[in-house]
Image 1 (cartoon, one colour):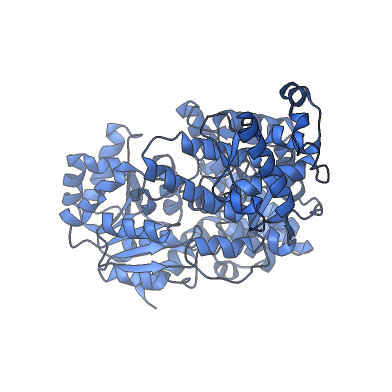
Image 2 (tube, rainbow, N blue to C red):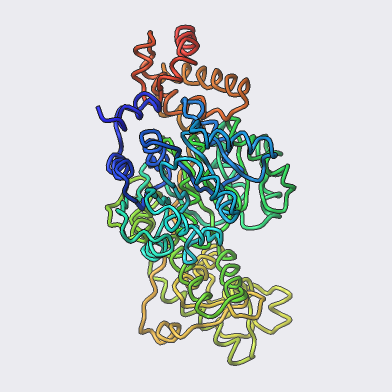
Length: 600
């Protein structure tokens, strides 16, 4: 048995490496550099944790996640790894204790925030100890082309300059070719070995549906499919976060808000509760989530359209890190498209910057409006070819494409008539009222009931017309004017549609059958006789986590409890054979677990 495999089994409780893990780990153990692109839940952390334990010295991890360092250290300590961190949350005495432990060779792993490397004393401290390797986590933060740029990451090339013989590993869960290229250049990793894993997360079911009372749609998702499950709900604005969290609480769901406008102590408390308790729903802006290690997040919901496919992939990847069935759900509507286009037009930066934002949005809209498999489209964005997955909404309930050329012509013609005949621009609501033949006060006041297209769209409902407008915007056949009011104008491409030279295919949303209520997505996957034991094990885990003041997943993840519930071990030897039960955890919890099993 290799030293790396021995550590994997004895410390972490797994009997085999996955994918490229073994090759990445050996590369680092032998002193080489590596750049690793691997999806969330793919096992990136082990790629630097195990070499840190095998090589002499301390593995130094650069992480932007100060709020999560304590939990990362707790998780390692729980399996017998000597770990510590240095960041701005510590007092002088605590920092000195960790520094002394590092210098004396008493730490296997040391976590640092990137901004600490600006302080000369940090580099001097590292020189006084033995560095096993540098791990640069969330490496996409170095890329200005990516979705989460952090200026502090630009200085990390100094690691190679100051310590040229120390192996480095840079890791990220998302990167297009452009981001990949920039990470390579910024961190001087052109001579490193590059490992690009499949970005596929087959356990996640991707679903996107039109907005129609989004709060009620979200409530239905939680109640019918994820009752009692942990989840994250992303909203674009702070006000929307507060409103959504309050709504869920009023419906009897334990939900907490998280956004940059909250007091830091409240944010920290809410994040801690989400990580440490079962079944909490976190409602947040994208300020929350990067590096969240909670493996049992069963759903990620978006109530607003993400700005890019990279951001969407990164955020949905926080679901199902343990490999068990999970849901990525997005509700988006016409107003999302109008709002995003307007934000791009009003954004700071030069024309190239706005063009780049527009390209990100176009790719996101293409994913939302596709008639094909969502996963095929998503993976293609990252340059990966795949086959229809059978586990997304377009595979399970295929949408129907329909010839929307005539409705498109009616709508575009209305825009043209208002603009050319009357020098007027209006938003989608007024255009749809005209097409439906609604004599609203505004229609009458503006004299729009005399326009030749008035009432020509009565064959479609208001909701269907909103879908037409949304899809014409997505296809670049309509545009949002830069006046700040969300008014709509035609584009250069509209002329071919109006002339009948370009057909317009649109997507008709399928009717989705309501799902039966489930108690828990994970429990529902178990045979009936194992469900009771699984829930008993979760109760025991919650109590153990409270006693130790650590997140429940640090005791054991759902996947391990599921394994125990299925196999019902009767001895410590049988328990040791279950994935995720290493030597230290067997020693600490083995007898307690056997008692829970025998009592069930």
